[in-house]
Length: 278
Image 1 (cartoon, one colour):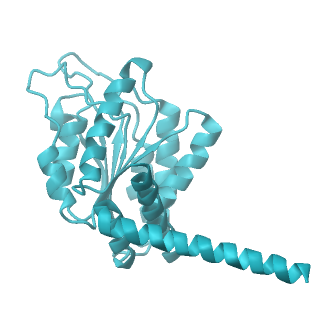
Image 2 (tube, helix red, strand yellow):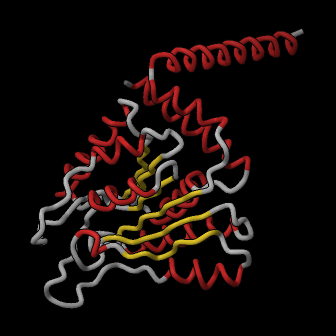
């Protein structure tokens, strides 16, 4: 008797939770463009175009950079033999100003075999290293705005993953620095299949406000439904950092149907939580 009563209470609670979730989701579908957009993505084809931008400027910790590279390689390995998938990896923050600081690392369809992957993808990504200033006249910069301006123009409808401390720094350059690329962001965001994910470490204490300023600008555009942008802070603790990288890059670069479904459900829930918080 008690067992039946207990089971009926559990069933009742489950029904209430389910109805509440459906009700909240429906409400925000009609009142919040971000939630509506994420719900529409559930039926979209699996992503097959990825761009990875790697910040190698002097403010990036080398161990954090190594963790990121290792996990990007591990994710891309899952696509070996699937030539429908293509990906592009570049680094920025190398010596030079603006586009001169960009370096193409990989731009290819997924290789057909492991040997080709090792030489054409893995070895090249692992060779990415923190920037060094080899000679005078080539300042070390972090042209984040310039990178976004170029990438968002070229990768319409793709998934963009940026590893960076989100600090735009071009003060040592003689040219006029790139402004915040709102026009390019809005144009990229018009294609709702496209999205941009930022994985960012904790900056120097004096740069926290500058980092937050960039996040605030992007989130404002996201809240207006102009861009699908997501931010994930990398833990400072090395053990937590490795697990975080693995988890977030599995979501960012899904290779199986389960991973795709999980990624879209997670994005939808994150968006709903954000909408509830206002």
